[in-house]
Image 1 (tube, rainbow, N blue to C red):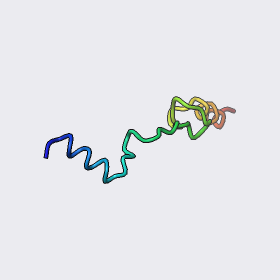
Image 2 (image 1 turned 60 degrees about the horizontal axis):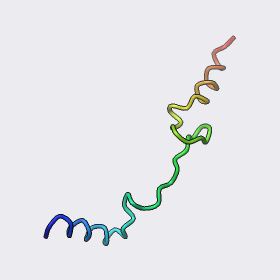
Image 3 (image 1 turned 90 degrees about the horizontal axis):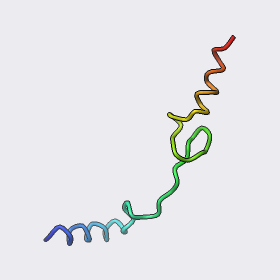
Image 4 (image 1 turned 180 degrees about the vertical axis):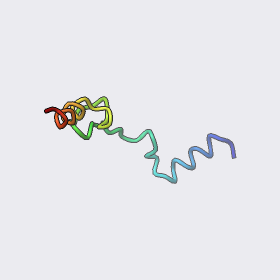
Length: 54
């Protein structure tokens, strides 16, 4: 069995919804914007910086 035949067989078994399926837009868990995640969100840094101010 050559490589192309093997790949096609695996795709047909998995329903063909591998990486080429519909792509969902990922959003930040903190502010809901696209382009970054909650770990790198600037909104989260602003909010957490207020708890140490006197």
